[in-house]
Length: 294
Image (cartoon, rainbow, N blue to C red; front, side, top):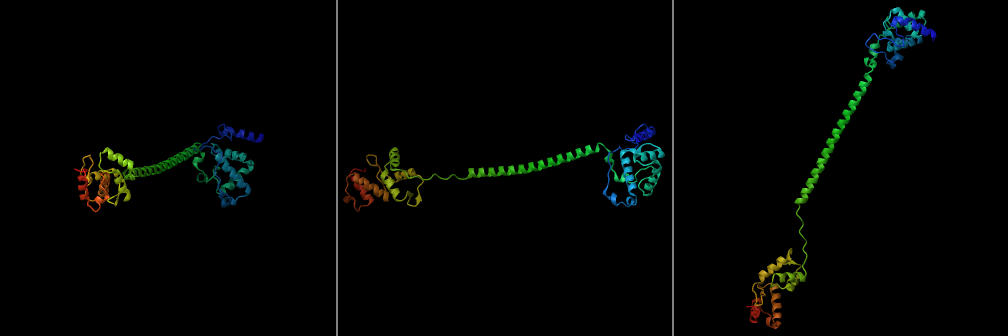
């Protein structure tokens, strides 16, 4: 190692004072700690024609090129010594190695690999290239993420709008839907009696309840009743005349009228024999004769 170091120091003054391990680049490319090696190396006819030792020598030349050693400003003979010492080749044999590599069309007279620019990239020697590529990839990732967020946002927006539309439609339908009518509940006798009293009505509560119970609380025996108080008021209009005590004599010939006339006859003490076979008009006349009607 001392001999090698001594040899390095002996040529350093001719290289601008720089040691071989710290070369001064004469080109635009910076020294690089690595270079691209392709798998077709094992099948390259130029390399297959070389002895194993020269194949190793050529790989060494590629390493010196990547390190910037071959791009140093040096005279040809001095460069021959530099390559010999870096490849651990005797100075007397270095020119023969150089000749064989030149004949194989792998290097030129200045030890420069002929296919270097084709096989290596300028970006490989740019220390900022990796950082630029990292930033570029990060920027692309961020752009892809933003695009995904925009797509997700649009899908979510459409879903929410559809949900709101459906909710509004349901609410509108619920508002517009007719409310079901309150279910009719037949009144009790006490409820009818109280209502008739409040109205000073001549309608007999018992007759009213009994009649509608017998026909299933239907108006005219057909239509289900909805408002029994309205039926009471209808009976009042149909009953007609008022007796001296304020009660009204029923008019007409309906079954309700017959029932009410019978109740009045009983109240007035008129026997059933006296009213048997008589019409409603005859019974009303009989009641009036007894002072029940004017």
